[in-house]
Length: 430
Ligand code: UD1
Ligand code: MG
Image 1 (cartoon, rainbow, N blue to C red):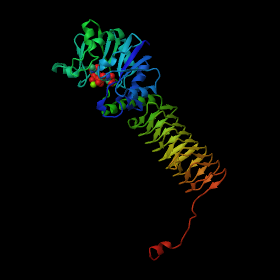
Image 2: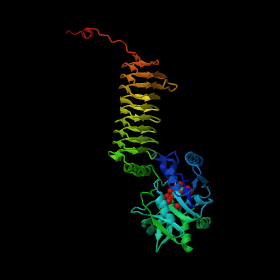
Image 3: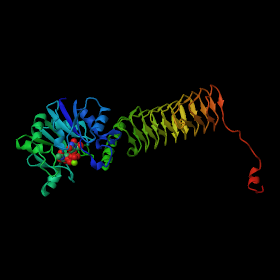
Image 4: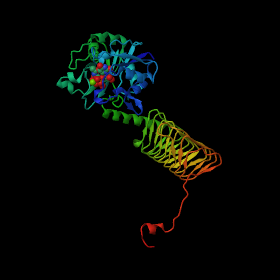
């Protein structure tokens, strides 16, 4: 499609009160700016991101995720403001859409409606009960001008139609008016919004498109960030429920935007799924956390923790069991275990309280557990160590050497019975 998209992301975002640039804050596991880029990519193959504050850091972050995005460095000392941001860009196509990098909820359909609106300029309008913080749109038989809040008269402050900050405009008009902008205003900035009044004065038709507030909310503070994430979560969960995932008390469940489900899955309350986790035909019980892992044909939790890079197939991982960087097939690890940097073969039972001692204080080591292994409760497996197929480990053992196929390994101190010791120790009579 022949539309260029400019994403404004050069602002400092001081209201975020953060060392992280505003547009790199994450919403449901993805940077705010990346959500906007994703929407833009649905519409255009010519995307320009305008940066200034932390230019290198933001550019690097974008480049690590996307190819073919262009960057424009705004000279904010000389030309501050949204008008300054678009100066000197050369869009590839005749039509230009301007988006904001801090509007992560905008969907391609709404951008499309602006593109298809009548007239050479289309601007997005929100109707708000409380318009404070936004530029007011002067409407009088059509859009006439946008007045920034700090420049408004008392009467103008009462206008409830505000500028949502997204525009579709012909390249020709945009770059006809941009050089004419000035900074004679309360903020001493070059306002992109001033092009509206200039165009109207020249008889250009400007159409105002009323857009959904939920999509066009800007994120300026961490409070806004939380609100945006809530909306994003609703979208993500709704999508997966429509795909067949059962969710109990979905408001308490968190799902990363990169996570995916297959087959029939069921999630109980309080489940947290992060990263590009894939879950297929499995049940995740309450308050389990699954990070960057792959789960299929399994039951997890309640209160299990599956840490990154784990693959769980046809297994039962029970309460208070933690996995990390481990591959587990046809296995039951029902209670209170830590399986880190390990491999477990099929038909194996991991007794309650089994711990892989994977870290010796300097390096991480692997534990290999074969097929049909019965590991008794409260076993420590000191890695690197290998437990061959068809073996039994006695409860309470500390395994420091490889166990050969078919063997029983036991490191328990023999139990002793000392008759009558209690009465002797406490000097009590029977
Ligand atoms: C802007 C609009 C206002 C509108 C509001 C909607 C102008 C002058 N005002 O105001 O009418 O109601 O958005 O949210 O456009 N940016 C740059 N370079 C800059 C300044 C800003 O790239 O020099 C970027 C920011 O990173 C941000 C976007 O432009 O993504 C909007 O900037 P912001 O400062 O939030 O604009 P507002 O003052 O809110
Ligand atoms: Mg501002």
